[in-house]
Length: 526
Image (cartoon, rainbow, N blue to C red; front, side, top):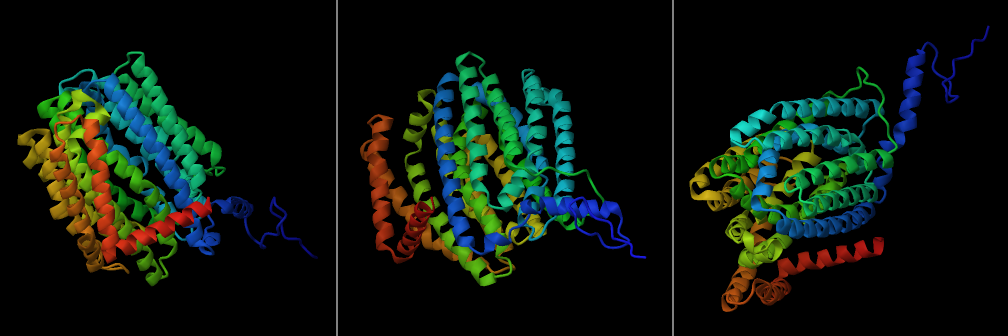
């Protein structure tokens, strides 16, 4: 007697003796496999990287304009105290922000092969951790108000706690979009959600809601992002399952989360200490000065990070190609960072007054104090991509632990000297400790060595010196002019001299030439 093998719902013949549930799971995995495959990217990885970079940079340009417009408008509608109140809360809540991701989005992006069951399990873990974080933050609201001696912070904390659950619900969907380098979709999500947040914040500020306008902006941004992500991504999780093989992913995520949490606590303690000792107005000045540099840096690095970590992860089995790809990018980041931070330090006061207005003059010195950290931060952050793309979660945890201790100690040292002292001490710790520690730890193994990173740093440091000195000397000659006039005179002089120096120096000229060629390829890819 012939006994036909059972057929799956899709019509394929299942092996004899297999359980129907196995057939259903196999069918489910096949149906969702399009969301996980990346082999098609390797056939033209450079082309995908360049086109993705073009889209992402365009999106970041739009986000930068939105951020700049929002900053200039809200800085004139709100007071430093309004910004300080929200910054006090976000400092505390940011300590748990890393748990919404739990390092599992990077695990999804970095993994060479991954299944529907694995990503589904990671999704439910993200939901559980985000929900727990929301409850913890909400429960801590009275403690936050007590710590800062300000009862208004209770309701602010309660409302902002919701953002954990909202953003945690989109982590794996966005990770899958990044894994397949679908950056047009990601760009649409980010720009539209930010635009909604900016409009919400500005309208609420015009209506007189003061610091609540900043809370409303944050909530509307996260909510819009969630709706768009689920609408664009067609992947839907299945119920949790056993034996899906997520052990290595969880281990990587655990190391990544522990390192990010330690870094978050250390990095956020500056606002915590300043708010406790000096009050909301001081926090407002300090946080706005920091954001004037940190926000553009994030928007500069974010698209590169989003595009190159998936690209480098696909090159793990090709060490020479991996090394050359990374170092070429790293040289461009170093040259660009040194160039612009030299300008920012020399023009700290007029930049602050033009962007924020005259009532923020005290923030100018703080802004200047942050500029050294501003050229160190991209170098340290991009060197850390080597840990991520190579799956070295434990090594990254070690490096972040050392650097976090140094960061926290720098805040303690600078605190007696006020917000300015904290900013300067933080910059010094970045230059003397953070960058050397990252360079040492990341170069211990892998295709890129410590010496490679130091050679890039020292090769392009003269650009910073030349741009800063020339711009600063020019500003001395026009210091009595209005801030805008100083920018219009000194800025072009610094840019021109910096460009001439780059053209006359062979190492910088090679990097600039490659950068121009890449930008041309970006234009052709549009």
